[in-house]
Amino acid sequence: MDHSEEFVWRGDGEEAEIVVYAPDAELARQGLARARRAAALPGAESPVFCAISESGYGHVLRSPASVSPGLASPPERGLLLAAELPARELARRLGVEEERVGREVLRRFGDSVGGLPRLDAATLRRVCEVGAEVAAGEGVIEEEDLAFLGPLPGDGEAVGRRALLAGEREWGEVFAEIEPLHAVEVLDSEGFERFGVEPDVLLLRLRVGSGDLGRLAFRAHRERIAARVLSGTFDRVADPADGAQSLPVAPAGTEEVRDFLLASAAAANYADALISLSLLVCRRALGDVVGGLCVRTSWRVGGVLEEDGASTHRDGLAAAGEGDVLAVAARPGSEPGGALCAALGTMGASAPPFSVQEDDEGRWPWEEVGLLGRLARLGAYG
Image (cartoon, rainbow, N blue to C red; front, side, top):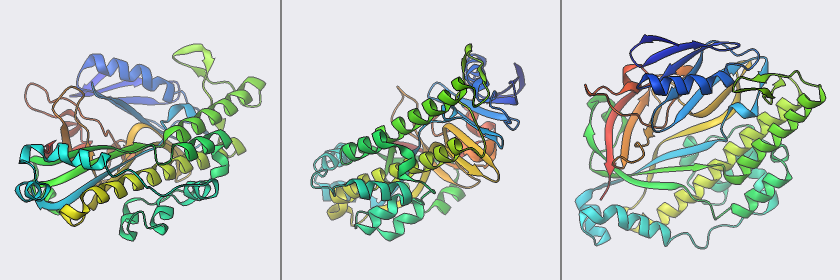
């Protein structure tokens, strides 16, 4: 493992070089060991990128030759909402002290989850195809919200019967993690101004996965491809973590790959529909107080997507082109908040949605290596 520059390490994989972004050498070694599985994928383009911190791990790789469900995480969706009210006025309307605003928001959220639209099997299949468009058609979200929740080309049949049953069962039971936040320190005044919110307004960070539907769909396709490997239909690719094991790898252009890509997209669309429910609940809880909650930005984590003739696998990383804004979560055990960041379009148009600790000189590794630029520090709202 070569320490090529500050916070950057490099190593060799079976098919591609690995670039690791980490705050220290020990975490870099851990990241390199995990990323070697990704770099074993036949046809993997060099380099495979990996980011690791005390908060999380993620990698991204592209291959025009093969696909593996075991090298990507089931899709998740994140949203950042803004209420155009300063803290003092919001507290007055809620009838609480300013320091209790966040707790009151969460209480109201919990009180507003009843009576949500139901979902039958036919509608769920439609959700897998077009995602949040179904929610907009049912009046769950506004048409303008769809600009932040664009669907992928999914297919409910590719998800599988068990996953569909799980998705129908958990609808209305799975909600986004919600954090009431605000900007406590603006770090890039021009970028923050372009983003278009005031420092003192309430921000709500929402994050939801694709639930059991996504988990079971990915498992089913891993098992399907592993069975083809075991039968000799597909070539065996040794798992670098355990040479006795094989990675579930299918060649590009096969029916197995086509079906898995449709299933991954369907799971992403389902996550969009789930977060639409949480958006509805937020507006129910606060609409009479704030007058409206606007979606300011969104980001998608994980999944496998066919792009420009190759399959991009993301495990724990957000798809983020240059200028895309995401709210990076705080480190576990630290004060709630994190950072509002603009992606710089590096690392295969991906970015870590998890934070990393500043070093002793106050440098933020994701910023130093050109992954993200911080617009503002975020803190808990009340």
